[in-house]
Image 1 (cartoon, protein in one colour):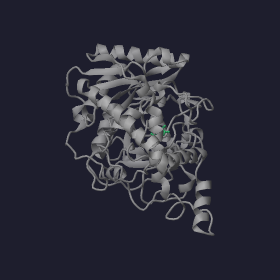
Image 2 (cartoon, protein in one colour; image 1 turned 90 degrees about the vertical axis):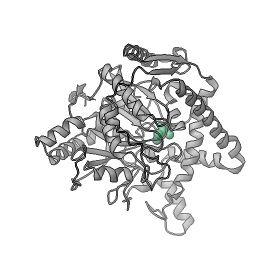
Image 3 (cartoon, protein in one colour; image 1 turned 135 degrees about the vertical axis):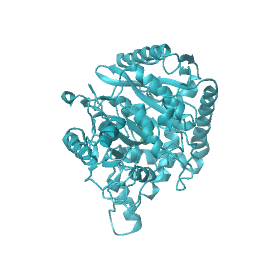
Image 4 (tube, helix red, strand yellow; image 1 turned 180 degrees about the vertical axis):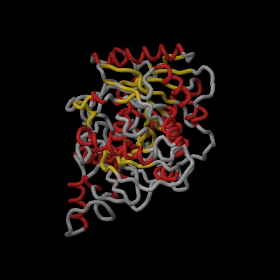
Length: 483
Ligand code: GLN
């Protein structure tokens, strides 16, 4: 493990003093991207340097990477799926447009779990992504490459998407900071839709300050995304240094319970969590234990799967080989659609579409889809009530360290660990949520997650920044000898 001083603020100073040029930074990033590609497969494409826009923004000249489910005009965008393996978009996503206008320099498009479904990093059409901390382990997903590029110091930040945990969980497995904002804070125009009521664009970096600097640039209302919020004008990067007094946090007893976990590794994750809670308390935060009905909590994962598969089936109904994307077959429209979809999607995607179609069938809608929506509402109401009394929820980000290949798959199961699946709560309610490194278990990074009420992103980042400063895992990167 090493620490990097290539933070956005430091690079800004070096660029402004003329100690480095944006071309130097791009060339270094690009060389590192190629260096690790064979080992880790973090990129779908590594780009040649484009002329950047002239800008005075803090990001001008800073290299970054974009998840490959975000539309970039004229640049291959595959969503790591065979069905889009040659797709070159004709329009820019708003997040890319804003970064381009700010002068940030795109280094490459990062590998994801196919169509952003899954959490392992093993389903991309270009092959598996390996965890740079231990290449026999998964990196997590679906923003697999986007977390890897930050942990290897290839770029100081990257953009990902998060529908259930896809930024925050792989960030935890990789020792970096992962943030998804309040629903609607960052435009999703040009993000390939997975489950629209749960999808968020978010940021990965090595510290909370960098997260805020990037979010300041990419947040805001967008006429092209009707779910975006009006901008309240708060500059997160200024707000994180404010003294906002002692804050009140809670954790959910039923999820952080030693009796519910059955491996030593999960117990060590809980040990790390309770140690972290003590450090957080010593900063002046209060941290309380609250109880939520276990049956309701056990419904998180089935509720997430029911809603996300239903929405994904509908959203991806355009991937048929007719309008765009890869086409297989030529005899008839039916044959083209059948062959294209049969050959274009991996098993995991097909399973989810079958589930989604079943859930959306007229006779099942009431029992499966609408019931899931009701449970979602109960969970969101419960948390919204708690956020009236508390400023945020602090939890372990995962139930274990990054799994070994073969140890864990995305297959559906009726046995699952709550500790492993609670992050979707923030997607249910559109709550802002951030994962920050909190130490190591068996030499692999682990993290805590903090989630707060909607539109309290500035306060969340403020709290996360204070906590991060006290934990000692800020700006962490994989040591060269670890790779
Ligand atoms: N792992 C979750 C899933 O498989 C979350 C994916 C995501 O957030 N994009 O659906």
